[in-house]
Amino acid sequence: MRCGVGLLALCGCAATVWCHNSPMYVGSNSAGQLTVWFEFWEVEELAQHRAGFPGWLGNEVSVVEVIFNDPVRDLHPVAAGAKLMIEVVAFDPALSLWRPDLSVGVSQAGEQYALGIGGDHFAMRPWWYLDRTHPEFSYPQGVWSAQFKVIDLSGVHGESAVYTFLASPVVPGPGVVLAGVFAPVLMRRRR
Image 1 (spheres, helix red, strand yellow):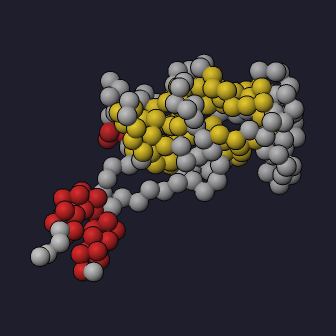
Image 2 (cartoon, rainbow, N blue to C red; image 1 turned 90 degrees about the vertical axis):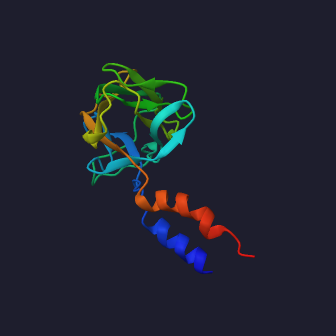
C-alpha cells in the first residue's frame, strides 16, 4: 500500500494537461457571414505522440456545425449545401492542421481544409500537430499560433473573420520522469 501511495504522489507532480471544455462551433451570423464561436484565448496543450509524427499532437478540440439558433451570440445554422472550408491565413512554422485520419495536413497560407457540408450536422476532431524536427521549430517560443478563416465554396455565406488558435507542447513534468525511474523499484515485490 505504501508503494502505491508513493507512486501516486510522484505522479501528482506531473504536468497537467488542460483541454478545452467546448468545441469550435461553426455557423453564420445574422448578416450571413460565417462565424466561429470558441474560447480562442485558451492555449490548447498538445500532449499526444504517434509514430511518424515527431513532436506533439492534439485532437481534443472538435469542430461542430451549429444546428440551433443562438441569438445571444448571433450564431445560427449555415445554409444546407454550403461547402465549408478552413483556409490557412498564417500558421507559425512547425504547426499544422491534419484530417482526423492523419492523411492530409495544411499549414501554408491559402491551403484549405474541408470541414463539411451545411445541413449535414458535421462534427470532427482534427489533429493539431507541432513538428519538433521542423527547421524553424524553437522550443523557447512556448506558444504557437494558427490564423485561419472559414470560407464557403458554394458562395452562400461570406467568409468569416480571421481567428487565431493557440497551441503549446506538453513536456512531461518531473513527476513523470521520477515515476519512470522509481516505479520499477517501488513496484518490486519483497520476498
